[in-house]
Length: 225
Image 1 (tube, rainbow, N blue to C red):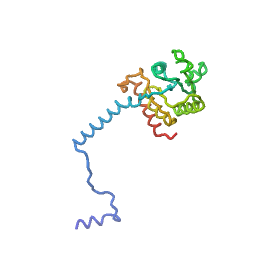
Image 2: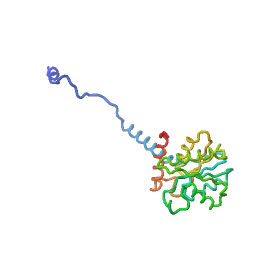
Image 3: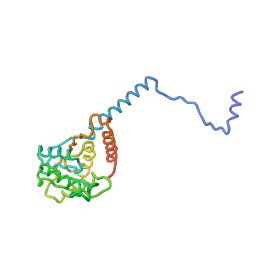
Image 4: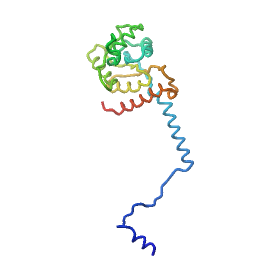
């Protein structure tokens, strides 16, 4: 009798809610899940810096140096050139973003050229290749400028090592390989002295550098150039 009365009270036979069963984690399940998540986070934190600051050189005759590197990194690049079997150093870089009107050198490519020369490098073995002034995708534009310049040069770019800065190395390596698919390309990351690379999360400089570059790498990874 009661069931009939309840059925009559349902307006137009509309049923807004229903009872159903659902699975949920037990206490042990929550503990295991939490441990796995913490382990994954720890793995990412400890491995992301060495992943981005990749060093994987090959036997090459050309050393390409990103001209915006700090002087300490340029010293490391020069040491790599002197220790290797390279014939030329190529410096790249966009126009200076600060001090343009005061500096004798208007772009990072020529600034790095002069800096390496002052450090003792043979100027005849250094080739500056400036990059046009672009607002975004500067590394990609530098790779394009290098490709176009060497296309009309007597220098054959069959293999090269790219010298980049710390966590920027992985992204630069990827972009240069996109632009130069027929060239064997290795990469060398300059050692950073601005933060503890093994504990990058313990300083503001490390956090800003690693996280910013990680985001930029993901952006470049999926961008259609």
